[in-house]
Each structure stands twice: as C-alpha cells, then as structure tokens.
Image 1 (cartoon, helix red, strand yellow):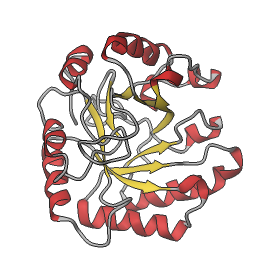
Image 2 (cartoon, one colour; image 1 turned 90 degrees about the horizontal axis):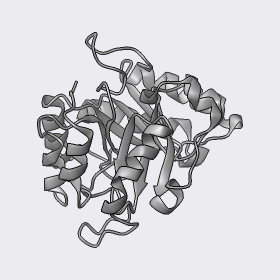
Image 3 (tube, one colour; image 1 turned 120 degrees about the vertical axis):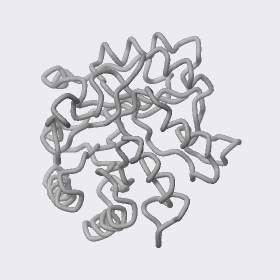
Length: 253
C-alpha cells in the first residue's frame, strides 16, 4: 500500500499534517444525508471516510452511494471501501472479490479492513491480503481496523492501524503499547463512542498522549434511534461543530 509516503509532496499518509478525522462508516446516504454533506465542508481536517454499502460493496452499484462517493472524491476526500475480515474467518476470495467491486463501482482510494485479526499467527494471511489489495487499488491507502493493539508486525503491512475502538469508559483508562512509540502519530487511529461533551478535551489529550493522528469521537452509544443503526459511528456526533473547531482547519488531499 502507499504506507508512509507523502502525497503531492506536502501531506502525510493520513492526508493531513496534524490530528484529524477518520470516519469509520456513516449510515446509508438516504438515512444520513447531513452526515455525508458535512464531509465536504471546506476546512474540515478529514483524513479518510469509509464507504460501507451493505456490509461491503453490496450486490450491485448503489446510485446514492455512487453520488456520495463522487462528491467526496471531488472534494479531495479519501474514500475507503469497507472490507470485513471477521477476525480471520472470511475467505481470501470473498475479500478480494468485494475489493474489486468497490474499486470498479466506486473508485475507492483504498480499503478499511474491519475486524482485522491482531494475533501474530494471522500475520501471513493479512500480509497476503494487503499485498493483493495493493494491486486492486493501485497503491491505495490501507487501514487495519483491529480495534486494539495488535502484534507490532502489523505496522509493516498497512498505512494505519486502529489501535482503539470502543467506549469512552474504557478509553479514558487505556494505555498505548510501548512499541507504538517507534512510529509517528499518522500511523494510528482511535475510534471512541460515548464521549461526553464535557470530556472532549480529556479525550483529545489522551489521543495526543498515546500518539494517535486520526480520531473519531462521538457522544452516541451502541444504538442510535435516529438512524436505526447499531453502530455508534453511523451518525454525526452531537458536538460535531465543536470538535471540528477544536482540531482546527485541515487540509484535504
């Protein structure tokens, strides 16, 4: 994959020089039109956004997702296709087939490997998958969605690792693995739900202290009645404008 190369000579592998957002997958554009529109707002420090049509690319191109992905790419936002590794349970053929559909239909700029295994025993399988996806997306951006600190060997495979995904109640007491100090913040992402507005500053300090360059914090919990999604990341945080202003102006690709 593109790994730690620069883009256009000035941007990091995340697509922005400092702390910014990674969007792990909003609800379908028909259910979350405001969310998708907000991603094209100028100055939003956005590193990437995940497109998840139907637990993957779906069975055929979705016109609403095509339009949403097109608007993001026209705005310079990196779009990643959502591939579920099911902690190693999905077959290599299924993953690669989904990747081809994402690239052929939506022209994604890389992939987000959700539920990626974290154990050393899966390193050869994930390395093979990553190398194959590299050819599909022509050196696209790759994010491994472990959700926890994996074996350090995974850092050699992808551009970014999600080393925390979970609730604020766990995040506020979390600690970074020692080996992460050998890598720059642009290599790591933290996705945290249930963060109260009153603890946003504390959450930012934890992310910076632990060396995460990409974040998504939300006050939403495991089930969102408005979108009907079980993912707390399916909709905008209630304090979206505030968190955007806290991070400051960003630079899109």
